[in-house]
Image (cartoon, rainbow, N blue to C red):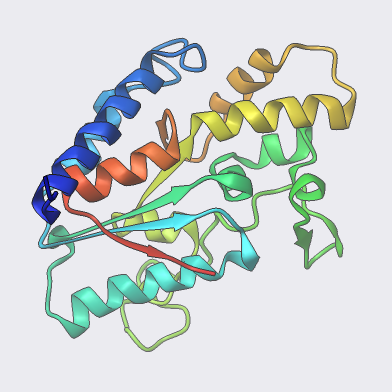
Amino acid sequence: MKMTRKDFLAVTAAGAASAFSVTARGQLIQTAQEWNPGDFQKVVSRPGRCRQVYDITRIGDGVFLNNIKNSLNGFQFGFGMSPGEINVVAALHGVANLLNFDDSMWTKYKLGEFASVTDPKTHAPAIRNLFYPSSANPSNTKVESEQSIYQDHSMQGLAKRGVSFFLCHTATEEQSRKLKARLGLTEPPERIVKDLLLHTIPGSVVVPSMVATVAVLQLQHRFSYITVG
């Protein structure tokens, strides 16, 4: 029997949903604090003419953040969509997952050294999340101005424009084990995970497995897919 494209998508969607729910119940997701489906549902249930998920595994000097800014401006000013019609998600996993954590975690666990991120002010491994804070003038709404909110590609600035940043619980588990070994820590990895998850940037949404989440966003919630090399 020949499988049609419609049949293929239906089977794939069912498989992705199954993997998503199994992961959410698995050992790596232990408490509601670590995995809250309600936060995920709030993002995917937002109405929007255009939905886009950025699949990001590399920090790459934050180039992808500028791409997201360009998406927002293209939708809003090029295609005439209102901000409420735009729903963009940054699915951060791999080393990019570390961008979900605040300055205290970058300092405590030496995340700049771990991720090979150099602070341009100190020329040393970053001990702060360079990509989060905004330096834009909140009252500047001139599209072409470099200090405008519309040219702001910081995570804080993009979040104010409605971008959601997803945090991968599986990646956090894997990274906690590497940090324990790298720094010679005595506490168990689960304690490091809990510490990290208590110190995320405002609005960061935890999902169980990003590779499953990206499939669910595409197949069940009509998010178009893009990645930045």
